[in-house]
Image (cartoon, rainbow, N blue to C red):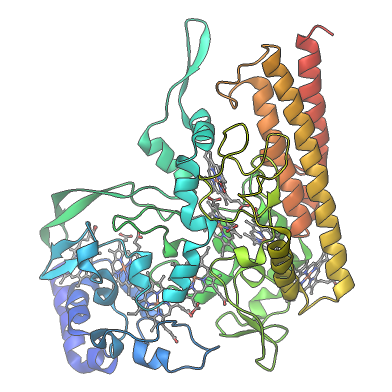
Length: 486
Ligand code: HEC
Ligand code: HEC
Ligand code: HEC
Ligand code: HEC
Ligand code: HEC
Ligand code: HEC
Ligand code: HEC
Ligand code: HEC
């Protein structure tokens, strides 16, 4: 049955459909099977721009209309559409996951380096984004790795004590690394039964995974598919907030939750159906009337007449003056997307001192901070007057200093517990008062700041905001007083 549909696929291709769509011979061979083997992938790809556009034609578009940033491309790729073979056989020599597959050297993980043959600007900007380092920033920082272990390690009561073991690889990849990205490793070739007989494929460890900072077998960082879901790779999907919600929603990072209760999110939900999601460049006022995550953080925006207002950026940090996400304090944005290299005066890999002052060599200076704030304000200015925008950021600055002050008080209480031997500082994340302290900065301060930055007041007050921040600090204080016998 399968074989007959494959025959049908081959017939269809031979009938001239393939020539009309300018498929390479290699891709025609892939499709002779893959029209029916994994038909969902084929159907998704058919809907993509890749299946319909030749690089030579994409390259010829005007600067602002372009969705293709390479200025030159190998001749054999220029005049055919981007099919299975154009992605899955690129750079075979740099892929340890390359395997012989029906006469082709195929790899499964199409990496940022592969995409960069046609999209070099996006790939090199993404290298500057914290997201591309998300695996190393977590696993390569002893303090953060200890936090991961104290959450993922299995617990058991033994000899009257609650002990915790190190988590296993599969647990890590199902937990933190689901978003931060795994390190994908290539194992031995294995023979597998498929619908058309047995075939050999390499075994992949740490896969499937589309974490933003995944370490790929070819040594590159990140997965473009985290936002550009394969195989449609549609700009519409990337521009919609649900794409980001997959990772930016929990109580530690509630950007999406905040957005949903903001006026902007309300407008998206109410009238977003009528917006134009596929236009490049994106015309503010004409194609859309309120921002999504992409608008404020990534998109190229032009006015209704097509004059450029804000350039596109896959680095994102060029519009981010601060690091709101406090570990443990909020601070000016880090200079480098690799956050493992900083040392504070206590020797910890943190961008701030335990008392909150930023480590100067770790974070951007006031001039760069001002530049980035203006870039973000530039996005707001296409819809809001300047007092509206300035008033908004005044409140955010106040929120940053208030929440940092609250974290400092909480940290003083934990230091007091350690000094008095009421808790052990060897693992700073496992005991009762330490867990309260973690919630203070990881959940409540972050939530309050995200709500302030992205105008979703609910998350700054009763939903993990100031209510919990003040209540929890009191609980920490009472915990200490009780044990100190006061
Ligand atoms: C003779 C039929 C045939 C041809 C030709 C063919 N494939 Fe496949 N391919 C298969 C089958 C069958 C599977 C296994 C699917 C499964 O696991 O269910 C597969 C699996 C794959 C996988 C997944 C490998 C993994 O890690 O599990 C990729 C990627 C792939 N093919 C790409 C290609 C590309 C690219 C081409 C063309 C250069 C191609 N295929 C040509 C039949 C074919
Ligand atoms: C965190 C989410 C995210 C990741 C990861 C991401 N992108 Fe994007 N990308 C976007 C958004 C949002 C847009 C829409 C930008 C706009 O509206 O101007 C976009 C647009 C694009 C476009 C179309 C417009 C253009 O820039 O020419 C290309 C091509 C692209 N991305 C390539 C990549 C590549 C290659 C990677 C991996 C190196 C990547 N992206 C990783 C979010 C992402
Ligand atoms: C624009 C580049 C591109 C094109 C074109 C493309 N792929 Fe992929 N493909 C990817 C990416 C990216 C992934 C995600 C791999 C990962 O990082 O985990 C992927 C994953 C896959 C997988 C493994 C995913 C799974 O769920 O099993 C298969 C199989 C596959 N592609 C087959 C195909 C086939 C068949 C075609 C042609 C119809 C095709 N691809 C066209 C980029 C591409
Ligand atoms: C061989 C060249 C080539 C490769 C490799 C390639 N692309 Fe593309 N990409 C294109 C072309 C051509 C277009 C269509 C441009 C246009 O319509 O003007 C495109 C468009 C896009 C768009 C915009 C789609 C839209 O709906 O507007 C995204 C996003 C994108 N590619 C992501 C990727 C990612 C991610 C990879 C790697 C997994 C990749 N591309 C690999 C050539 C390529
Ligand atoms: C659902 C997705 C998701 C999961 C699961 C996840 N994180 Fe994160 N993590 C994020 C996001 C999103 C950010 C960035 C937040 C921001 O920039 O506002 C982040 C940032 C971080 C950072 C900051 C790193 C730096 O130096 O910039 C640390 C540390 C961290 N997470 C620890 C963890 C630990 C530990 C776990 C597992 C127990 C975990 N995360 C699980 C999404 C996730
Ligand atoms: C697969 C999970 C995932 C998806 C999807 C995702 N992110 Fe992230 N994002 C993360 C993680 C993890 C980090 C933190 C990395 C670190 O600190 O090391 C992060 C960090 C960020 C940062 C801080 C970047 C910096 O350099 O300071 C911004 C802004 C951001 N994400 C916005 C977005 C937007 C907008 C989208 C959707 C278009 C999105 N993210 C989609 C996981 C994700
Ligand atoms: C109205 C514009 C706007 C919208 C819409 C928006 N953001 Fe933000 N975002 C901001 C501002 C302003 C900041 C604070 C600037 C900074 O961190 O330096 C921020 C901060 C962030 C950060 C924190 C980075 C850090 O410093 O820790 C992340 C992550 C983020 N946004 C993700 C998202 C996601 C995901 C969405 C959609 C669900 C979204 N944003 C929607 C304007 C916006
Ligand atoms: C594409 C247009 C657009 C952009 C860009 C935009 N906004 Fe808005 N914003 C709106 C609209 C429309 C409203 C709804 C106004 C109303 O309440 O009548 C709104 C409402 C708001 C509110 C009202 C919150 C409330 O519920 O009282 C704040 C605050 C806000 N925006 C701040 C910003 C900031 C800060 C930026 C830039 C980081 C920004 N906006 C970018 C269109 C935009």
